[in-house]
Amino acid sequence: MLAILYDPDSLLHKTVELLSSKLVPAFESPERLDAILKALHLSEYDLRSIQFSTTADAPRKARLLELASTNHNEGYIQHLQTVHDDWVKAGLIEREGHVLAECFTYPASTGKPLRPPKDLYARAGYYSFDLSSGVMSETYKAALASANLAFEGADMLLGVSETNPSQLDTIFALCRPPGHHCDGQRIGGYCYINNAAVAVATWRSKFPDARIAILDIDFHHGNGTQEIFYSDPKVMYVSIHGEDEYPYYTGAEDETGIESGRGFNINYPLKVGSSLDEYLEKLRSGLKHLSQHKPDFLIVSLGFDTFHGDPLGSFQIHTEDYGPIGRITRQTLLGIPALILLEGGYVIQHLGDNVLSFLKGWNHTTP
Image (tube, rainbow, N blue to C red; front, side):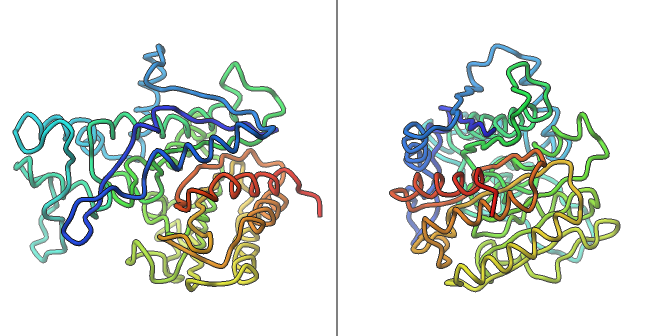
């Protein structure tokens, strides 16, 4: 059985990016989630609204922040929560304005540890790595709501939630904003909190020694997820993504992990425009590795920017192709509790159909 979670607060989130020296609306818009919800409302799937901002359970909110703190820097979370208000109070922006970095950290030979600058204006660059992810008045609220969906989904699969039917084996969390570019201490790629990392922390809160599989099939490499688990042998991370594409500096095949985590990080960079057959070849190879890992819990970072013609991605994958992608994935890892997290995808008019195609394949696992 599959259930789908969403939070209406995600519709409040917008961000900005710097293009041609002008601040313009970015691709992270409420219309994306709305397009998916419209398609799902017309389907047979169990769609559940969980609104984090109206949750009266204060201990549960505290629990989410506690879990996030296991793999997110405390100073970073504090920055995310307060930076917009701090800039408004300092007269740097208006209430409807946004925070963007002026200067980023960079390699140096001094040997001194990096630390947040004292200057409020400069601090934004310490906690971010690109200009695609402005912080606005509702950003922290939306980021927590998104992370909460990952927490709630993993919690339901654990059986902690009283509302969890025993036959529930898959949760699809419509996380907005996405998460896989956040490394736990820096904003970037429209990502503010790493939702997959929150899900891992949730699962480990009950099963500390669990073996966990993360399959990242967004068009862009999940640099943040890789960074967080790069030395962790209990978490196997597999990513299929565009070669030499954003975030540009990570995602090569020779990035296999460090220390005890060596061999548990597997990247499959594919050239832009690669065919479905080329994609499925990498998918089957990645799934074989994940299956051999014998995971107790599966996380799928699912992006639809792999769709042909996507403005930020593009393989030669069409709507009907997401069916076999979903089917092959579930068929290979059948019986493992699975949390699917929404990442990218920017062709709004096709998003709903693409989601339905993937879910149809996921639910039809027989050859």
